Length: 76
Image (cartoon, rainbow, N blue to C red; front, side, top):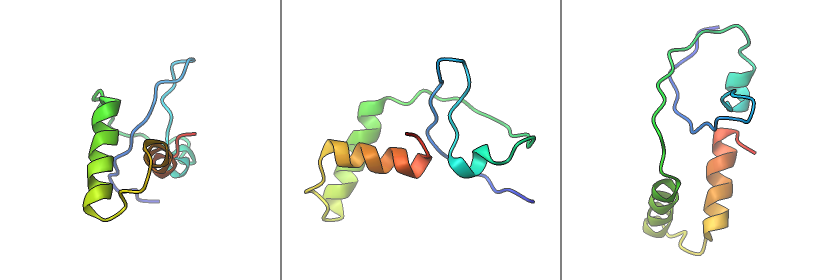
């Protein structure tokens, strides 16, 4: 199966593993080139909030936005 490049926000878990979206986690044995860049969470949420306002979804709360971001990245 050929995979394409994709971007997601992962989290380093207590055991040292990196969280992956469900579809990537199923690719057991696959090898990926990984680049780790710290994400300032308030910036991610702030960007999402400004995008929601721009697109007419300004009634979403920060918790709604956080849930959307995490669900889209496969993070629980």
